[in-house]
Length: 425
View 1 (cartoon, rainbow, N blue to C red):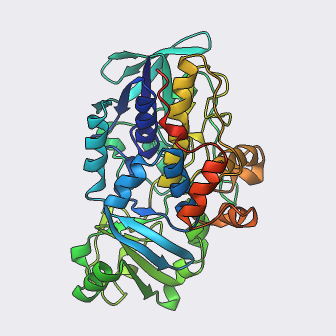
View 2 (cartoon, rainbow, N blue to C red):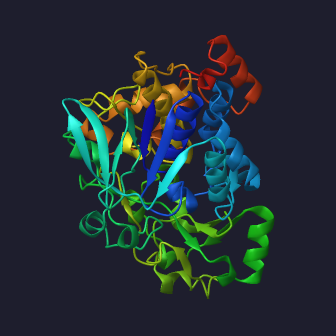
C-alpha cells in the first residue's frame, strides 16, 4: 500500500513516520527544500500542557519526533511569562536530524514537489499532479499543507508578503488539495470577524544583539527587556495566532528565547522602535525578513474532518496540523499528523479509523476543537496545549500533569501502551 503525504512540515513528517511504521510505502511531497515547515523558526516544546501531550505520545509509542527535539534542545526546563518547564530546540540542527531519520526508516521524499491538482474518481483521490506535470498515484493521501499562504492571502488579510520561511515567491504558492478535490475550506477568524491570524514570533540575528544580551541568552535561554511606555501596543495581541502569548507581559516587554537564533515573541516589531531598547541598537530580523512590519497570515485553509482525521466528503484523504483545524504549535501538529498516518493505513486495509480517547489530552484536543469550530465563536479561538482556553480546560478536566510516570501509568491502564507501534501491512 502506498501512502502519499502532501506537505513535509511537523504534521507531515509525523504522518509519514507513523504510516511507515504501520507498514506502508510512504512518499512525502514537500514544495520547498526543507522539512518541518515553520518548525525551522519555531523551537518551543514541552511548555505547559505540551509536556503532558509529549509524554502521552511517547507512552503511546509515537515519540520519535519528540525524541529528536529533546536531543536538539539548547535549554530544558526553563520558565518565561505564563509558561513553565519549556524546552527550546536548536532550529539550526533539528531539520537535518528529522530528514536523516525519515531516510533511515525508508520514507521517500520529493523536495520542490509542489502539488497543484488532483485526479479524482468518485469520492476517492487516485493521484496528484506536481507543478512540473508529474503524476503521483497512491492508495491513501494525507494533506498537511498548513494554512499559510499563498502570498495573496498575506496581502489581503495581513500587511503583505513578509518573506517568511515558507518562501512562496521562490517555491510557489500553497494549494489546498482538499478544496481542489471539491471540499470547501473552513476559514479561521479574528475577534473583529476578519479572517486569518498573524504568526506569533520573529527571529533576530543573535550576532546583532549586544554581547551582554547574547551571553545571558546563551546561558539562561530567556531574556526579558522592558518596552518604553510610549511603544506598548496592546491592540497587536489580538492579531496573534498564538493566543497563549497574547498576554500583557508580551506587550509590555520584549521577550527573547534562545533557539539558535533569538526568538522574539511578537508578531512584528517596528525596527526603529526595537532599536530604542538598550542592547538591541543593532538588531536585525532573520525571519520573516519583514518582521519590522508584518508576519505571515495563517488559518485560511482548513478541511472539515472527523475525529480519525479523515476529510469529510473524500474517502481516502486524511489531514493533520493546521490543515486539520485551529491548532497552534509543533506538538499539536505531531499529535494530529501521527493519528492521520495510522488511520490512513487502517483505511487502506479496510479497518475502521481509530479515535484517541478524550481521557487523554491528545485525544480531547482533537475532539474538542472539532466540535468548537462549528460555532462562530469557536472559529475565533485557537487550540493549544500551551495556553489560552484549551490549557485551562486541561487543568479543569485533570488532564494536565508534568509527571511522566503518572502519564505512563494512565496510558497503560487504558490498554494503549505502544498503540502507535502497530505493524498493519
